[in-house]
Length: 445
Image (cartoon, rainbow, N blue to C red; front, side):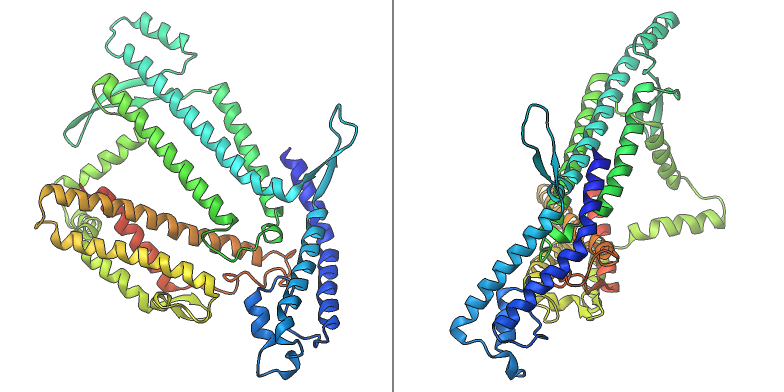
């Protein structure tokens, strides 16, 4: 199915150049009909504001041939031609499929299926992850039943009945607390091998499919909060959060069942490695390493937060050299709607940074209950800010891929506000510092 959809999208891409020429002809014919010059910077996907600004531009008297009362009529005709162009684009990706017991073939829209496919892949991947979490929990419970059983044949019989899925549990002390470390058997599990192979092939073919999926053909992409990419990003983050909650629920259930926390070999190794920092150093090399690793922890959150605020005065977008603080009042070199969305997101990030400063300065002056409440809300706000920043970087990455595509013409990308911009050093540093502060607030007790 994946390869069939990929072939459909590839076939549609071959028709796009001819459709773009037809759309360009529709635009030129409309401009000529109204007696406007052919070099008029108005396209089928121009907004009402852009049309009105162009037709009333005092620097170009030759553009002012449309009477003020008929400018809306010109825009409505422009919208009508744009709908024709969109219908031609959609028709290029339609494929007729003969279904048993139906006399007439049905039409399948390749663009719509391409839009839905990433959501399907996220759901399938999530289902496999949760299935493996459930299998691990069941294996740990079975292993616990034979943990204190001295009868070796009985333990082996339990392992055989579980189709050799049961591993071994052994006790360890991590940070002076007793833990049970579960080590799964290092053998080939045919079910897992089949599932992961199928998942890998599906993800690989889906990646090939998405490289052929022309998102810009069916989506305006004039927003970073209410467009297709945002829906995909927020859906993925919601699924990731639910998977985390599921994993946490399983961990708590296992701890309640066996009476001790249960961890895996990798987490146990990392915990033991971090515990090594608490041991006394023996030479200068170990001392320097310990100082380098513990330095970020000794710097107050307020210092990191002030550094994040300082990045507002560095360039956030290139080549327009838009500094971060200009988003607070509205960047003039950027699309108005996009600048508004970025401004409110920046307000939220600054509130989080200020909360980090306040929590760092007032931590020892607040009661334990108030300090816990402040830390909890700071952690929640930090999570929201991380998701929003990740959404921005996701947009930048996808739009860079679209802009670098040889099949995409600049006629299609004219109204994509982020296409002409690259993230600057200021935004990169701000994102890194906010991520660090959010991780610190999550680790705080």
